[in-house]
Image (cartoon, rainbow, N blue to C red):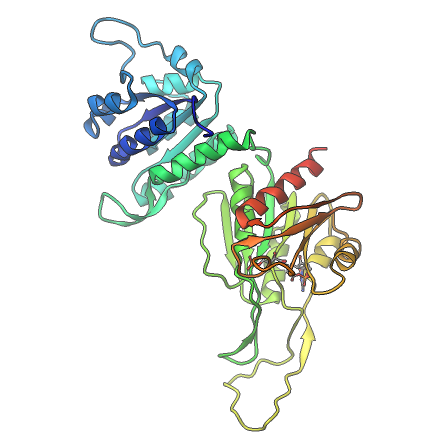
Length: 401
Ligand code: PMT
């Protein structure tokens, strides 16, 4: 198990979500980790030291000195840990972390640490949306810390919105994934990644459209993965029910290819990496009927005109961008994918296999083959979030060469 034998230092600050830490400690201990808990004095109002120390099998400290006069050495705690988890991390603790306000044991320990730091923020929705919180989370990411975004739901205040600390299982999986991936993948910090996702809908009349089966899952998975790696992500999505709460992801929703084109070029100039995973309609009705078309004749002809090719135009306007296209082919897959790589001036193309059941549109899995001008690599059928990792690993290898 990935966290067996790992030393996890949990720093608890004063929020109602502190009670969830009990479940997380149990989970870590069951999986064979060593757990040390430190807390702020105000966290003691929400969860008792006795509970935390019983579960973690270690004494719990909240001050620089213990009652018997011994010094609780923050440097020792910091250097002991393989990973530090700030959870729940209140707006106050987050602010102190990023501005070096070292007035309690957990901040002194955090500032003495050399290991990776995970932050699970928890606060009320307006505090979470406040520009200072957003800026502080961005700063924490710039420091190379991993943010486990707050979730949306009912909050202790009774309000509903984003701010609930991620569930213990989510936090546990994130830390397990970190140890099992074996690498500190924060390579995209400072990069802007522009991603297109989902289908486009081309209106025929006020109630009908030409569309396709894309769900947006592939593009949203790439966006989540790029955000986790520290990138600022601009996600231009066609109609899709998918959501993302990651603070690094800015979603712009569009309907038609024309709208997608316009949004892409609002952001393309500043992008370092652009990934076109959208299934863009190649044609749109020449005229959009103002009223619902009535059923009359046995045959109906709709005249179509070509949509702009967004990816091709990105290739033509390329300055610094590393440009990645997708290919979805039903015949001569590889030949056509390589043709697109050249014709659209791409740095890399991802070919989906449509031959596999479970790959391509709608499914949660995909099978891909990646081509650059000089390399190619085939991958087995995997969940789309794993495929997203393969794609970004390949991109990173190319740009960090
Ligand atoms: O959304 P999911 O359900 O998860 O499915 C994912 C997917 C199968 C849609 C995705 O993995 C994928 O393959 N997307 C591209 C599908 C496609 O339209 O391929 P294409 O071969 O027709 O286009 C080639 C490339 O040009 C694509 O990068 C496409 O985004 C881009 N393009 C195409 C036409 C156009 N007018 N503008 C474009 O930018």
